Each structure stands twice: as structure tokens, then as C-alpha cells.
Image (cartoon, rainbow, N blue to C red; front, side):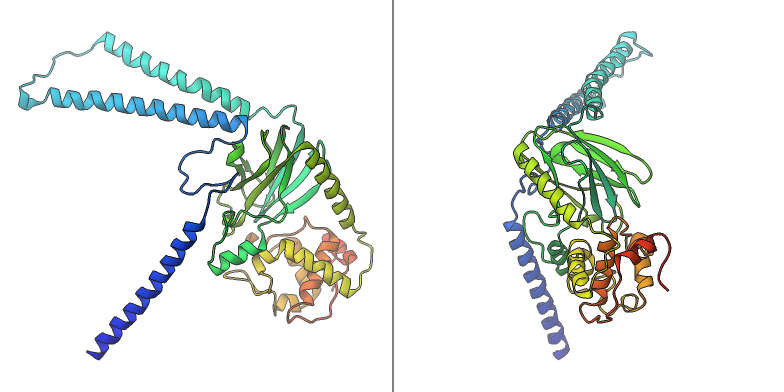
Length: 396
């Protein structure tokens, strides 16, 4: 009896824990609201969008849905009526004929007309989606495991380049199992910014595996394939924040690869371009400059927060399959090994290569990890050493 009582008590405790977890989940779900420019709560339909293309897609979707529904109802109504009206129990006798030219003509022409009615607007829309000519601004979106890189190629803002990574606070919330906010797992550290009312051409490619750049509010979804260049376009008709995600299963961090596009007025966009160019100019360091340890660590802390903390966490402990940097043999060992890792990646892309960062940024973040948390190696990597490492000349 005592054993049974203990078991029942254990079951009760488990049930109480499960009930508490479900209550917490329900309480959180009740707090979630529609995200303007992003997903809506319980959304089933397409979004009407904020571009002409997205609006046309929405209308075409409903036209096709209604047309298919009418065909479904008509065909099954005739079928069920025929089965009911001409059933054997009512004494119905089957008609005896082998062919009917009239019927054959009808069931050939009617589906043909239906297909034409569906194909014409669909073809017109597909052609419009692919017309990337006369763009006001061209941006290359490069997919990395697991972030997006944006390079402003033509138009106002030409020369601007940056990485867009999931905000580290959201990754921490995911690791803790405590989702919060309407933009959960959609917030990035550096959103793509474009002007309203301008035709934006997006060129997509990838650095490692196949990704896909998708923003539903723009009616845009384009694969990003390593070694290939694809393009698409959009023209946002109102300002605001719009969200999307990588739409190809690109690896274990696929869920942590959001897209955030900020659409600004022409005046605000010009101001953003000026500020961004000044920021990039300030970061354009001379790789031959010799840094002291304190300054390089301070710079490396910023680079780590922007690019590494999403996976390795602020405390350097990592999470799940992500290895810890605090106390890591690679970090505590010779600089050459860690320089290999940041330049080339590891484990088939699980640790991505970071060649897109500058020599100074890479030297700073390596130095930071070697001299932060419990890692007190006193080792320092200069930008010139990282530049040489890119050419295969690693320190011994």
C-alpha cells in the first residue's frame, strides 16, 4: 500500500508540473499579438502584403481557391445526384451507348477554357515577378549558416555592407525555453533598410548551403544557392518593419535565421545612409596597425556580441551541441588553431567560417575569447597576423 501511495504521489507531482507548464504556455500564448509586417496569431491565409505583387498574389490565390471550390461542388453534386437518382433500388436501368461526340467535345473544351482562365493571370504575375529591370536600388543578399549578409551594390547607399544576425537576447530566450514578445526569433541586430516607393532588386546567393530569402509582406521568396546568382524585386508602398525567414531547411540553426526589412521615408533613408557610411568608415581599420591588449579586447567584445553570442552565449558556455568557449582547449591553446577555426569553420558548417569579417574584427574577437571569462591566456593576435593567416601563413 505504501508503494502504491508513493507512486500515486509521484504521478500527482508530475501532473502538477505538467499542468503548471501548460498553464505557463497558455498564459504566454494569450499575451502574443499580431506582429505588424510579420505573422499574425492563428494566421491561415496569405497576407495581403504591402507591394503590388503581393496584392496580386493574394487576389490570384483567392480566384484559384474559389474556382477550384466551384469545380469541386459542381462535379461532386452531379456525381452524388446521379448515384442517388439512378440507384438500382429505384429500378434505374443503365443507358446503353458507347460514345457521344457532344459529351466528348464538352468535356474537352470546358476544362481547356478553365485552364486558360487560370493560366493567363498566373503567367502575367510570374512575368511581373521576374522583371527586375530599372531598379532604383540593388542589394545582394548572401545566405550564411546562419545569418544574412547584405551588400548595397547600386543606387543610394552603394558600398554599404553588413551582416544581419538573430539578436542574442532572443537566442538566450530560446535556449531557456521562455519565448517572449510578438517578434520572438524575428529580431535582428542589423536590419536591412530600404526607401519606400522605390524598386528594390534583391540578388541572392549563398556561401555554404541552399537558403531562401522570403518576406511574405513583399510577396518575395527567392532561393539563395551557392555558386549561383538569382534575383527578385519588390517596391514597398508604405513605411514600417517587415519580417521573414529563411525558407529552406539549411541546417540545425535554420529556425534562427530571420529577415527584418525596415522601410523608411526618402528623407529618413538618406539620413540612415549617411550614418551607416560614417559607421563603416570608423570600422575600416588599417590591418597594419598594432593594437594593445586592452583595446583589442574591448573591440573584440563588440564583435563577439554582434556575431558569436547568438550561439556561444554571452557567458561563453554555449548550449546543446554548441561548444563552450570558456575553458575551451582550442581557445586556451595556440592562436593558430583558433585562427584556422574562425577562417575555415568546423564540423561541416556547424561552426561557420567568418571570412566576411575584417582582419581587425577577427583578430579582436580571437583575442577577446582568449582573455575573457576564465580564459586569461594573455595571448594577443594582431590584425596583420590574421591578414597573413588568410594567405595561409599561420603563426607557429
